[in-house]
Image 1 (cartoon, rainbow, N blue to C red):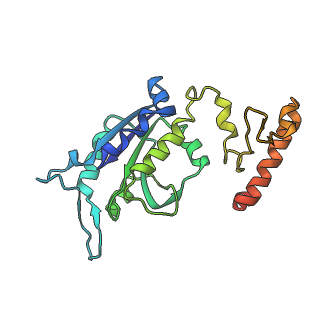
Image 2: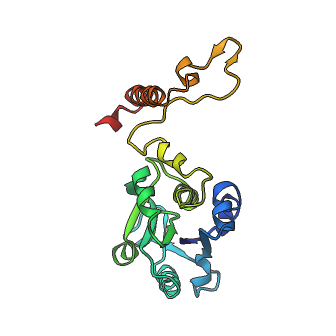
Image 3: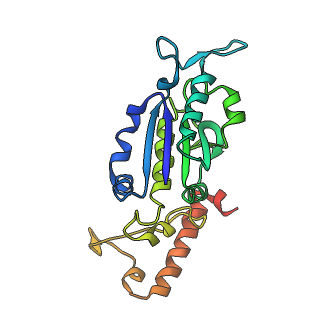
Length: 224
């Protein structure tokens, strides 16, 4: 898979992709990431990429020309399955969406800033708009990092145990069951006996019941 990211702050994305699972995916050649500075596509003297919005109002808007130039230039090298704009008013991101994106070959992520991007870019180039939550960030870089991490770890060969991802929270629309490790007793706090029984069927049933219980308590909306 290849993912390009279009941003005005490329330095914000240098760290997240050089560690843990995403680094492993890159080292194995399973994932390549291109980070592109939008200011490289502007012709203004001071590398300007934002301007006042028509109609007045507070806040600047990312200009159409550098965005279109960047998208068209990058599209010469890759045929994008999705051009994604990270924005607070996008579709709420979910594990289901991460699963879908992990099946694609080429993605372009556009990191918004200021009051957003010129609407004409959204209308003519963006195929999907994603929000990672009902709150506003200073820019789309952290949201892009979330998307890359959640998608990259799903690529075959990235996780040591590929079945591990299948038991993550939200994969079956339930939260994960409680997990425990050694020692079996710590400060008189004991691991549930069922997990020490070796009975796989009973353990699976227990985990499913615990997932239901936890979901019903913490995220009842998922059960709908």
